[in-house]
Image 1 (cartoon, rainbow, N blue to C red):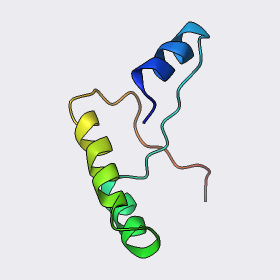
Image 2: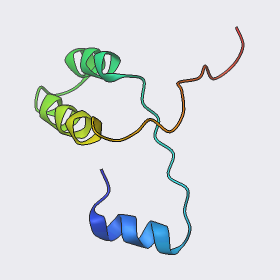
Image 3: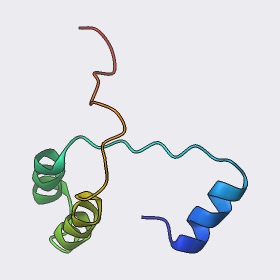
Amino acid sequence: MPSGKAMAKYKRVKARIVVVDPGEAVVMQRIEAMRSPAMERVAARWYNARRHLPREAMPQASRRW
């Protein structure tokens, strides 16, 4: 979750932001299995901040299986 200042810098240098999101359910499962419970609040904040944003692309598989 880059700060507003960091995002302004990225925009200034024409950086491309790529969000890799396996989905809220997967993230919460991974937090439960591998992270501190405090990370649940961080993930929830991230997903809540994005609920109103349009999806830029449909989720795609990394490769053909």
